[in-house]
Length: 443
Image 1: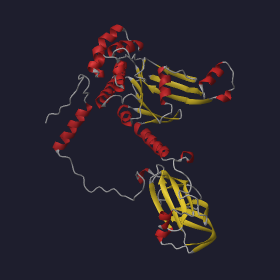
Image 2 (image 1 turned 90 degrees about the horizontal axis):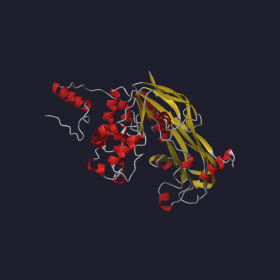
Image 3 (image 1 turned 60 degrees about the vertical axis):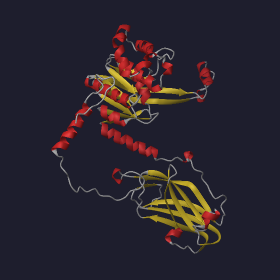
Image 4 (image 1 turned 30 degrees about the vertical axis):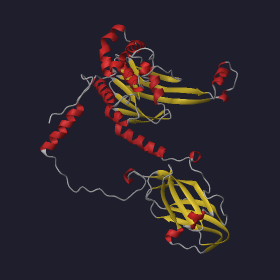
């Protein structure tokens, strides 16, 4: 049986530069060029069977909250359909619906009534709601005196008392302190055992992996992957790494130019090119590939043994690597007119990321640091994109490695018993009957 099913589900928002444009639009006083439109979700087709716990992950702004709002009925679709079978309960804005001047107890009756519970039902569950929220003596104090965590705990404690078939959750399992988070997870496991259909969005992938049977990966309002937990999370991690390591020049946080002031002008860099091991000009390379950087220059007058330097910087400004002609002991002699110099890397050991490059020409290595003199310097003026395989490892550099299993110590009977005991403790529901639990393990 299908609990949730969508067909070409889409939601479009109109973005006005100023509220006055909305007024003009209502009375047809402006043309359509004065605003923009954005599809928060676009042509979504999926179904969730009854009793399944489905996770929803994606970067901020990908459309997760909009989709959950559409399923909950809070938002109407621009086109397409969303159908649910059974009663839907939503845990989206836990702090919404509270009246700050009223006490916590009074707000329980207020919010639970808004959610559709009868006064008799609320009274019968009042003690359970208060105990679960762990508000304590503050329950009879005005909500305006509560911390944000206390308000969220109270909202969650009320919402889970609803009688529902489908539960929609948006990033709320991280509310409150660590103890309350564990209680929330325990409650979710209980709902799962009861066969409830759950659709949950969270940036905490550990929670998603622990609870869900399946994951939908959302990007720019579309489902880019739908499948088993491990495969989808792996894809999401790779996408996050790719985006995190990208550099766009318009967002370059570093000043481009000659940090030493005006170039002295004796030599100018005329062209910079990057070539891969196949001799193709490109700015995208793979770890352990060859790379050639070709620098064209023009010396207006004779210059004795100038220094060429190249430096690599990660996108956060960390200096990763740098070389110059002096350190290799390369004496260029006296240069004049046009020329070309190349830097050859037989094997690039940089891992996947985007890197800024400084390329410049100095009189020499040491006096340039003292006198701040540079012939020409292109600072943070070039970007190369590195691609890596998963087996290259993580971090900044790739070091050749080999794993070897030297021995395999078998666990003793005592060690096995200890591990089994820990497994038993992790599978227990410590919060079912204990408003203030304490875990005790007998030695």
